[in-house]
Amino acid sequence: MVDVLDNKRAATRFRILVEIAERQPAVSQGEIADEVDVTSQAVSEYIRALVDDGLVEKEGRSRYRVTKEGVDWLFQAAGDVRRFADHVTEDVLGAMGEDAAIATDDLSEGDTVSLSIRDGLLHASPGTEGPATGVATTDAAAGTDVGVTSFEGVIDLEPGSVTVWQVPAVRAGGSRVVDVDQIADGCADTDLVAAAGVEAVVSLREAGVDPDVTFAVGEVAADAAERGLEVAVVATIDAVGRVTDTLRDGDVTYEVLEA
Image 1 (cartoon, rainbow, N blue to C red):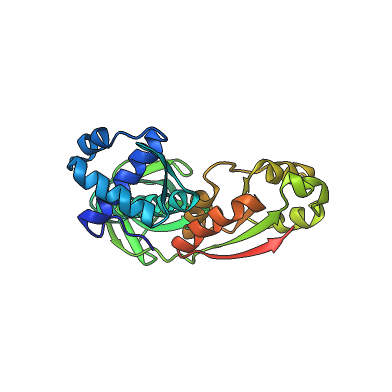
Image 2: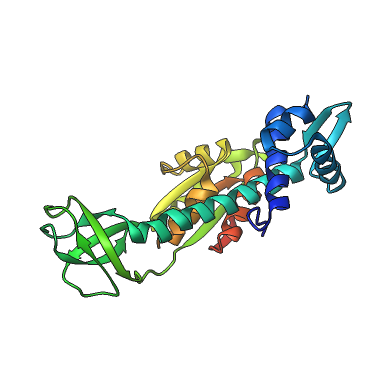
């Protein structure tokens, strides 16, 4: 796994590759140097290394383009940053601050509550039964949102898994050659259905299934599985790799099946 927060050089390499992707193909090393706060000579050395590693290709004088491998590296590195930010905001700062939960019963400010995850959402129940507790910061009727703070313990959560159904690209028949009954059955007992690619969306519609998600599918599926949900992803063959890379980086259990 790429860790762009591991050291300054890795972080600078990530930022320069992002700047190239944003400015390509006409790349001004001076502008990148000003943006990243390094010297133009340093930028030149970083770009030379990126070219040698196959992440960037040179098209002419001051003309560069990020390769497919470079795009994949950026996706992976950006995922590392996102997961670290999520850890800080949710696990570290979240335990120090206040969060919202769904009250399972009427609650009053100051009540001690037991916390659990249901359908991917935080729920608060009266009492201290369960491995994680908090204190209600607001009054709340059953079924409404309640503020919770003073978290203690760890929520007992069984991670979910992801099933990825692979459908052909339109050049290979697309939705016309998909077993839509198989897709319908595969999505029937899941908590979330996601589609990556036009052929995948059409295949789900032909199966009578409306996808819950059609963008950032890998990230959403990984997050949902971490919250204990069972997820079905229908993905065009060209998009399967991006989805599974994200799931693998998130250490999510998944399997890929032919639709």
